[in-house]
Image (cartoon, rainbow, N blue to C red; front, side):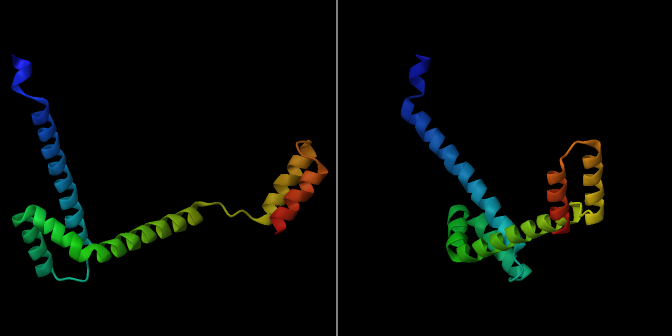
Length: 130
């Protein structure tokens, strides 16, 4: 009789409620992150948005997403571009920019040891000088 006490539709309803609850928290965190990331509104406006989203949970989140969707997209795009720029600058600073003379000397050492042929040495030399 225990199997009949929680029918399939009740299980589906519980899963739906749990899913909506998780989605709301996800959207709430997204809205909070966007509100606090913004520099174009005052602290008072930020506080009003936070209170509005907390007092009217689903309606507040949906109104914020509808009213600020373009700004959210632009701010996210700027953040991604800034992160990519920082990564590119870091990679450039870490990447070894060796001297062409040093590269040619290494290639000459490989040629003298017999590890590469004269044609390979010439190709490495041209690449280093380019």
